[in-house]
Image (cartoon, rainbow, N blue to C red; front, side):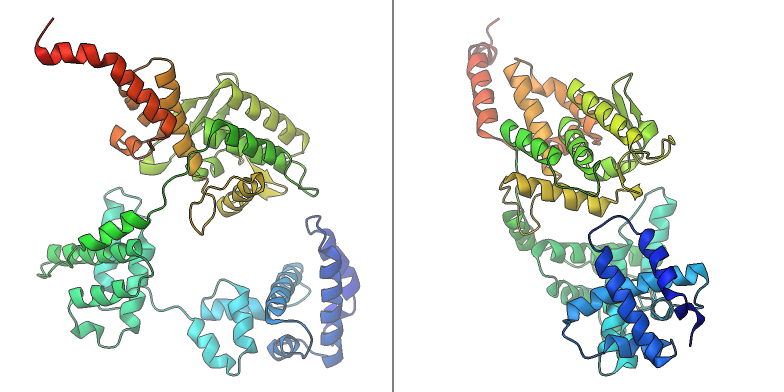
Length: 447
């Protein structure tokens, strides 16, 4: 019998104590005790035992089994780190078959033919198709030229399609791209796949291989624009409602979370920050004395120092005070927003902020993905324009400053954010009527 089972209760309690406080501790403890009892009965612990435990007849459904497999996997990893066991079968299978998650491994072990199912999880060779070297060289070239070029996944997906498509080497690029685009679920994805083919065609031309470019489909462009979700522009009342909802967000085990969500939303609305920019903020980026915030290495390699409104500065000051009282590290390079013991990830931040908007009852009607945090950036632009019109300021003279504040390359990128609301239309029409006599004098050539 494995030695770690002799003192399994003490090890289990140590593992439970190091978990974050949550209402699932009893479930963890009960599951691990049943797992210990199962292994103790078989007097051995290996992959066969683990697979038998997964396939044990019980009332649990498949989803419950997969969740429990993830819990056991994390526990076994902790035991390996403590030196209580030599290996974790789940981790070994993930490394062997190049799989990052535990659920696919557990599904494969539950299948009738685990060997072939596990083999199917192994990802194909990167750039292993006949066009793979061309795609790899293009990505390296763009990065050498100074571009981030984070679009490598687009080429890897096309490369995988070519590896799985029989006889791909004997077909023209146009034929392969047409077949690949036909499998896309939406017009925008079809256009994206066609653009990948056009990039590859140009790369082949540079290398001396004459290649016809796949044709751009205008009908798909029109369909994409027709089905594209319009940004939702919040009213000032709705913004206040969302902020109030964030402050009352239920979070008994993370007391700092409501104020964190509130501050994130304030920065998204009052400073027009992208959610990725909010997630990358650090303590050294905030200067309360100057009332500014530094946004570093953002889109297009841009960094900018933004003056904040008094509301945003006050919200940041309250948050930083509560953050310090919560015992979170105060190193200048540490993340600004923390989720208990670790910084908020971008995915977690987006999920929580969307949940706040849903709880506020604001119907943004932006498609099946639910509320988009980026709509607050659109709202920031529209409300800025509306305020300028109310104050009698010519917005055209302020657009270059707004573009710089948002981190855009030019005002054309900023105009994309300008959604015409009814109030903005009325204010613009009133300004035009006011200026009409002067305009007519200019047209008629009168002084």
